[in-house]
Length: 155
Ligand SMILES: [Fe+2]
Ligand SMILES: [Fe+2]
View 1 (tube, helix red, strand yellow):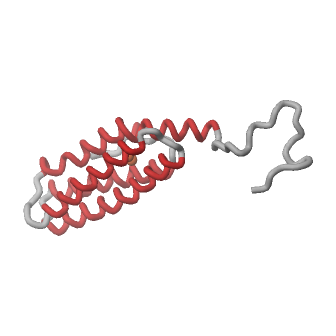
View 2 (spheres, helix red, strand yellow):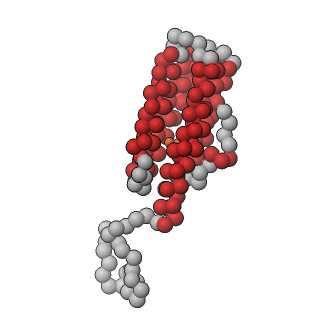
View 3 (cartoon, protein in one colour):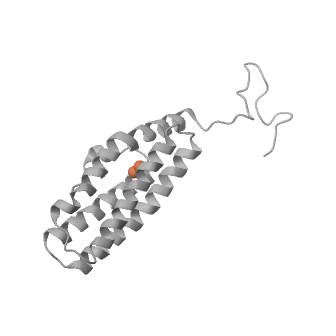
């Protein structure tokens, strides 16, 4: 699979991880397509799994911090994919994987990106544009003294 520009969502760390994930998937496909043998395939799947586990944890905390309402469904998708990935890695120990057997990796990635990652990224970006929510520090009413003159709460 190849990285496409439309995969860039504008959150640097996430874009960087997505790029590395697409590279990880390509690496698995390459090892399978070129029949590099079980140990290369197994190793590539293991590296992909470790990239995925970190990425999913980062996305899930980002969604939690920004109160994304569909966090649970999203996290469930991550969990299922990870389980399938680990099952595939185990299978690679006993069976030569075919290109058909690994194509769900990039299909999943593309569909998950469109259906799940884009919506949460939009939500997070919108929040970032509006600024972090600070319920304890309401906006200063017009005519009030600027912060720093007189009392202001230190936290
Ligand atoms: Fe993602
Ligand atoms: Fe995701």
